[in-house]
Image 1 (cartoon, rainbow, N blue to C red):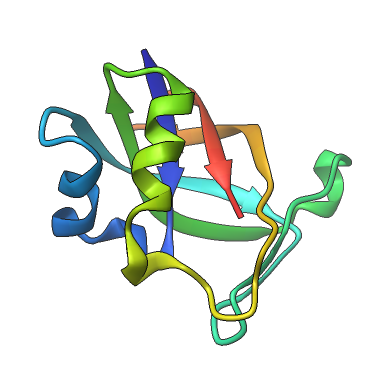
Image 2 (image 1 turned 180 degrees about the vertical axis):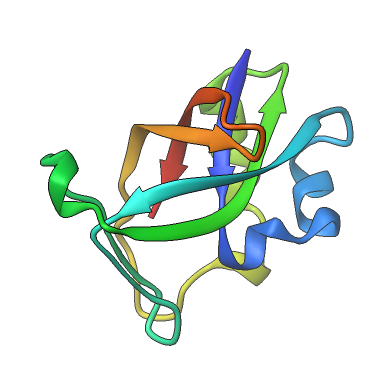
Length: 108
């Protein structure tokens, strides 16, 4: 029911399986304004032309609703960012490596 674009730590299959073992997974990319991997800062602009950085990750399809997925993600200690209390959930245009558009949620 839901596609999610994962990057950084959540591209790890063992962590994805903690959400749900049943899923489909694809290599994917999105365009972002800025990504600072060392400080875990991701910026996505509402203005398409400002998103000039390519971010590689995984597009994962879960047959679950987004609320249940978020609950599962909240229970994965390994992905929590130290000193970060607020996250953003938004819908983005992700692309599979075959260039197929795959509207996906992203959490950052």
